Length: 301
Length: 301
Image 1 (cartoon, rainbow over the protein chains, first blue to last red):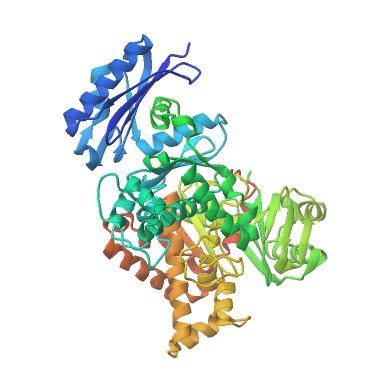
Image 2: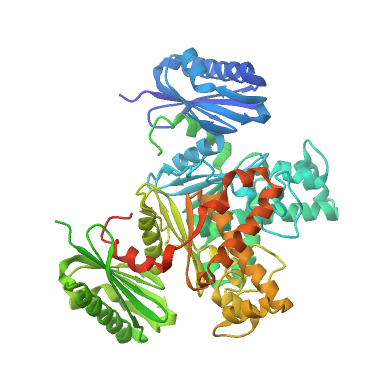
């Protein structure tokens, strides 16, 4: 008999944990604030799983394995350079496995979310790019149901592609990079303020602020360019948008589609690819990264 | 015992045929001029194979199957929209199979060349993008030894990615598209003349012509951008450059690497990816598309 699945998404502000039934549906979900540093991260993950298991009436060891998504570079269960979490190098797999008494699979959170997006689409053979428009901009890529990491784990790092040699210089040092256009940090950099820059910019754009409108146009154009790049390079069947800035909802999706429509008027070839209709938002605030983490025990490549 | 392999590359000016021994090495190669139209294309392919078989001392039926690479959209052995060949729709597989008495596998020529490039690298599990800098600009993609065509066969169509909103409008109707920067047709469009535009532009650039120098810079920058896009999206281990404009040789490779070096000075992340050292030219004028076509009988996805 298939066991329950447990998945954990460790983010910059919260830890999101889910218990899935053997069919892959969510039976319980719980979020706790994340604490910084090695002990804080491990402790928050343990708290989230403890609570979600109580809600579901299971224990951690009822799962054959537990999956964890986390920002940063992940190899062999070790997380490196998760700067938002105050983590330089942490063997998350060993520490959590010792605590929970089951194997723990750790994956980069955007890759985990891509697996979750693929699972929500419910077509095992499909290809999907999950485009995270969050603090940064990056994609997780599932080809024929398998996670594609690339030769050095850099697949999907499209935030560092340049789309305008006259564009602003980003935090990565590159001019006109996609991440500077279409991410929370990029919007804040252009706006010149930290914190809830995206919310401020969108409000100011609505009030007619010219500079805010320009930043908003760049954001929508950046998402459109990212979808165009993912489809012209990989020809994935679906590009699913997630991450903090998708809190904009239809404004983001419709705005990006409008940019794509303008391109399609100029180019019959681009129109034939139907990029806009392949683009979607994560449905109904589903915790894709936690769901994907729970699916990590299945072989995804 | 493994049979010999026969591969045919039908191009805009010539048909290139090879016979490979069971180990994959070339035992004979022959080129004939291509003739236009359905009958011309079929006839030239038959001539090329007939001659190369004579040279190798084999007959077409000594191969378990014969592979053919051809420009245009290929599905189920049928070629569509191969405009350079004067072909609208041609069931190349049926016609050649009837002539040769063996199964005939037909594939888009850039995809065939990607298989050839992968074969030359000699590492069955590696990932490679073959970037064709020819009349057009497109990539063929091999991931873990398998050809990746994408959901609708459009994978690798990176020529239609925009890298400059203030760039020239291309034949595809798109502004600042990669193909306009880095292809024979794009160079000709910018230079304002058909024919051997690239040769003329390079000579004029060397003579100090300002506009020719700008077009040359765009060509080198376009190849560099293409490599950056392929590696940041797919993280392929190798990007191999082929196609007519690689007749420039080291000037093209070194020029693109110089652009990449400038980016790397600005960005530690980009520098860590070592894009320049993953970039290479097809070695020694090898007929990669014909070699790849000969390998089509092996399962590549």
